[in-house]
Image (tube, rainbow, N blue to C red):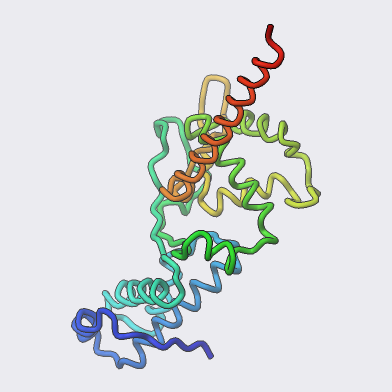
Length: 251
C-alpha cells in the first residue's frame, strides 16, 4: 500500500477549494496519493520521458465526474511532490520551433498535449551525492554532447550534420552495439522522447530534410545555463592552448 502523510501547508486555501467537490477527505488524499504514485512510477519506468496530463486526469475521472476535480488533485500532487520528495513536477508545452513552420511536419503527433517532467529541487552537490545514478553517467554524457552540438549550431541542425559531428566522437548511426549506449540511433531517439530535442521534417527543393531542434527540457534555464558554462570553459581552455602552442612553436 502506498501512503503519504500530508502536512498542513496551504491548509486554509486547500480546504476552501476542496469544499466544492462533495467528496471525503480520505477520498481526496487517496486520489492525490494515486497521482503521485503514478508520476513516480512512470518517471522511473520510462527513463524520464514526459507524463501525459490526460493519463493523470483519467485516474480521477474513472470514478469521479466533478469537472474541476482533476486539476485540483494534480495541483495538490505537484505541491506534495515538492514538499515531501523534493521534486518539481514541471508542466511542458511544446515550444514553437525556432524556424518557420512552413513546409514542416512534426514527428511527434502528441507534442501539443500537456505533459509533465520531474525535476529535482535538491542542491546539485546533494543530488550528485545521494540521488544521481552513476551507472547512467554515459547517458548524461551523451545527452550533454548532443545538446552542445545543437546549441553551437544555433539551436537547430540538419540530421546529416548532427551525425557528422557524432561520427567525429566515434558515434556512428550504424552502431547497434555500442558498449555503453547500445544502439546509437535509439539513444538519439530517446532524447526526442524525453523532450531534449524536437525532430521535424522540412520540405525543400531537394526533398525532405530532418531537422533537430532544442526542445523544452534542453531550453530549461538550468540545463541551458550549464551547457553554456561548460562550452565557455572548453573554449577558454582551447584558446589558452592555442596561445601556449603559438608561444612555444612560433619564432
